[in-house]
Length: 158
Length: 122
Image 1: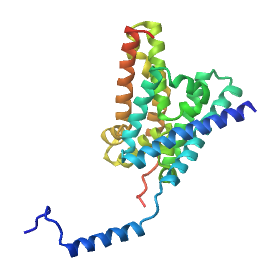
Image 2 (image 1 turned 180 degrees about the horizontal axis):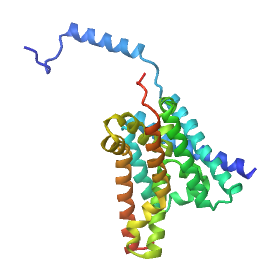
Image 3 (image 1 turned 90 degrees about the horizontal axis):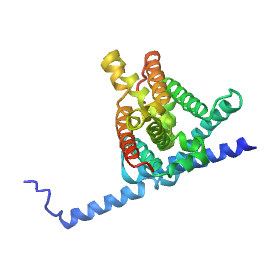
Image 4 (image 1 turned 180 degrees about the vertical axis):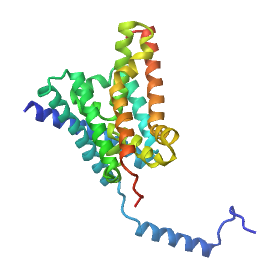
């Protein structure tokens, strides 16, 4: 009775065309440029904040450059966890998209957010397991790729 | 003055790396989780072929804070460990070099999840 491969009748086709024109006219203009700008400035600002922590570590806390870089990531992870806890980071994420999730802040947010949400399912399989919903795949693929690189490097040092 | 230049470089390079991520979101419909995995693996291999090191040298946090920098840290750790202890370094170096970031995320993540109640989605 209803064949979805059948061509619509000309009248129906005209109606469909009018409808898609209406959709085109009413949907907002491409948010492309706006999205890219937001990702750029927020992502840049987060990295800039990381650089501020590095400079603080180097100049005032007498850290080595490795320790300063670790200090910066740790502080960003801490701030993101806190902002996620009080519900602010989700708003930043909605505004900035990749600008918020590509920096290490996104990694931290991806751990905290599901852990908070699933805490009522228990400390072990709720909080403990959901902490790795997104961090798990990232660590699995990142670590595996680095082991491949390490084996190649041990066999053919370049 | 030197610090201002460092901050500007971090802003520009970090912003550019995030913009590429947003371009992937808008153009390919890849989920953020896939983009994060792609970024870290890309960081591992870009670092292995020697492209990411100079960028990290130039941009500081602009290169180390995005997830590609996490991949770069995995690769530099693995290479250093292989130089120091040989073949087994391929298995120890990556996580050793990234341990602080991972431990911080696990620790602060679980503490936050314990302290704060989830709020209803708007």
